[in-house]
Image (cartoon, rainbow, N blue to C red; front, side, top):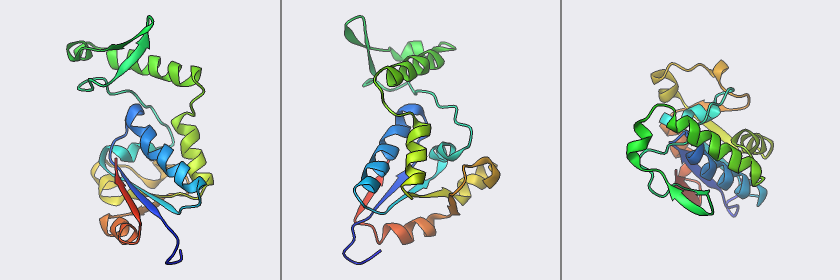
Length: 162
């Protein structure tokens, strides 16, 4: 990377379906614009690097989540999220909406990031904490700690925490 070249880093801390979109959309868009991008996956963001994704929506405590239904936008009362199966049902609805609207899946966006040579770093401490192995993760990622990310972030023009 030259001194004049802009770059971006993203700390990815959340791994639900709804929170997976912002970092992958921003990373792939920046990469398409020619920026070198590094994504650092830590804590609950780390599972986004697993080979087998089982993403669900986080409806609880998310008052902004209003789904288009019956000609209006309806929110889900937090009390309902305590009922077993509600998150799974919301996840199915969201995945159907994503497909219906032609939005790329997280798997597709992640593959686009790999193809665009976005550097993806899995947090070593988080891997140890949650007992993940590199064999559990997609190919082509790096494993490193906070110092690895900070080395990159101090050189980046844009640093995001998602």
